[in-house]
Length: 307
Image 1 (cartoon, rainbow, N blue to C red):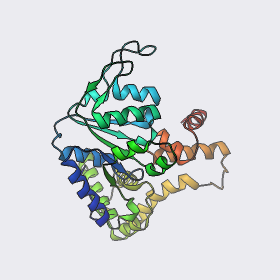
Image 2: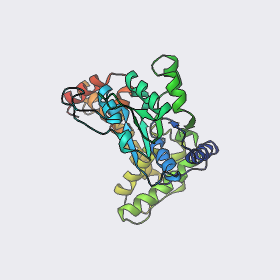
Image 3: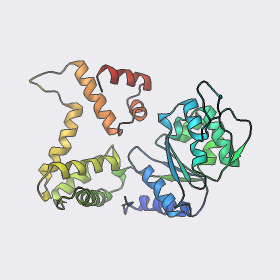
Image 4: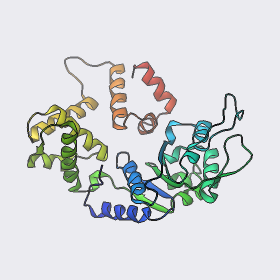
């Protein structure tokens, strides 16, 4: 997937990413969910001298405490109950790029080990007494206010400054003006080609609707909408009414109360959870943050409602 956009602020960040690719310094990519942080990380790797070396991705929110530490740094046999000798992703990525997404969610212990690794290029497997040394370029990303977390004492200040030697901030789609249209056209062409269906285009009135939408889900939300239109619309030209129908179907799921049958509270909660999870790409941790509940509570609610 290409990086598409002509907005001045966005292009400045693209230029920064291209410059970052020519160095080996750590890069921190920030921005709302769905703005393209993973895409930028992959392009920085593809533009760099390490392009033919490994590119590994870790979603830090999916692994907690010791699990993330082992995933990154590996373990020695007997380090803890059931532990076996295991290479971590840091070793497996030697020579390449390691991309840590949701970096704001790592534990204080892992923050400390990561700081040493960034400063010295050295680390120890869990349960090991000797140092190991690798050559790994680090790219991290977050949709959180990392500076705010530093001020609150929830993220190490020294690690933040080490990770953010080069900081790239991706603006939300609602602030990128006509890029919405450029992206919509690009996605339509790309999706039609991949699905082997005739090319589709947007009527000018439909494009006006896209420009007026808020796009809380950013580029990801726009791409999902274009995918729906390609699959569900047979016509070559997507009209304003077609577009509104498929946009409103999604909005109705969030707030609709059918007067013929008032839903129960459980039905409302279930539908709400499904919409939030869909907006967050199925990721539980960001969904829990979005609705301001703990991850464990979210899991209990999902289990209760059969999600």
